[in-house]
Length: 263
Image (cartoon, rainbow, N blue to C red; front, side, top):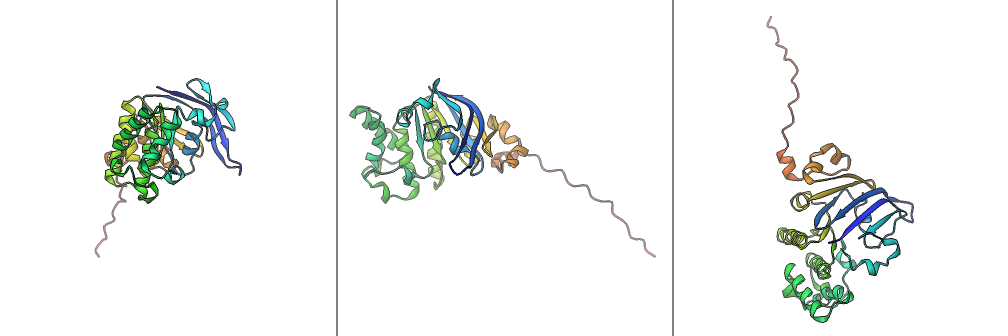
């Protein structure tokens, strides 16, 4: 199991955009945490601090008690695996099997261990029949699954999934939902960045709401999604189940009717 502690982290991009503002939060596995918020709210910027793709402008990130500032991205990849929102930013091998094998092979697993992890990841994502296909020949939804499988095969304690259901049909969404649950059962700390509030409500035990680079809410889904005023301020709609369960709005009082007199 892994744990991280983010303390007072702020981050400003070179163009001057302040993407994170004094974020302090901690988590430990096993758990599934949903990161929600509108585009540009800071979700992805936050997650990329965990594996060293970004470094804090201020504050610090501790992973298993050690400051990430002194560790390379390659070293952090042994603990934190990251599936990008766009799979084309991640895929570069000639076959699906080679793509999925790259991560565990790069981490130094023996050949037998690599093969076992690849076979399992392909099976979990329904990709076994496509093992010899070139990833670039696949449709976007399948390329997305290949990217997810390559992360799963690394078998890291922390897994970041950035919008994993993008481009998926209902069957693909169901497969990813089962994957998230299975990773948690295996003791992983899963960070699920998503705009699918229904998926977040079904799979996450904890929700982090980001707004304007700040952590606007941290709690169980029922509490976070019940705070409709805070969600509205962050431009986030609650899941459909919460909207359906909400009491109907009180009818507006009707003005007294005026009876016309008859002369």
